[in-house]
Amino acid sequence: MKTTLLSLSLAALLLAGCSKTVTWKEEVQLSDGRVIVVERETFNVSGGDEMAHGSGYRPSEARIRINTEGIVTEWHSTKKDRSQWPENPLVLDIVNGEVIVMSAVPTSPTCDTYSKYVFHNGLWREETLPEEFPRRDTNLYLRDAMGMPSFVDLPTKSKENQSSRYPRRLRQVGPHRTFCHG
Image (cartoon, rainbow, N blue to C red):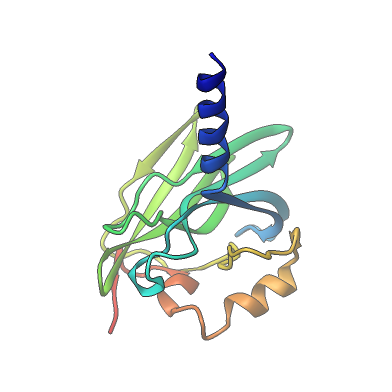
């Protein structure tokens, strides 16, 4: 019995050491001009990609909690690329009372595909984007690394998101469902 408890305790410690969660709150400006504050989380697991020689941490899931009129809605990333990196949420909006999240996931070494999720009647559903649609500027914070500030305001986000370290395909969604580069 003691051996089993010790084994379980060690396993729990090892698993806890293999993941890190980054959490923050951020201001988000909606298409109608309103500014709301959302809670964001990125769950990271040990083992970076081949560029990092498998060291460090890499994202495994992204979450956004939206509190609108006392109702909390939580979006979770559902898609992953071939290297198991989760889709990147780029746009959050509320239109006609429905919460919308738009994201990007790499589908090849040079292409990303955008997705649109709508929270309707208590459920998230994916709506297939047309091949062409109006371009939207990213309104979610692109940075989600260790050492994040606990709160990100609109000016900080605007400055950071416009940094050349982020490719154009992440600073906008559209006007094409698939964005190929390089």
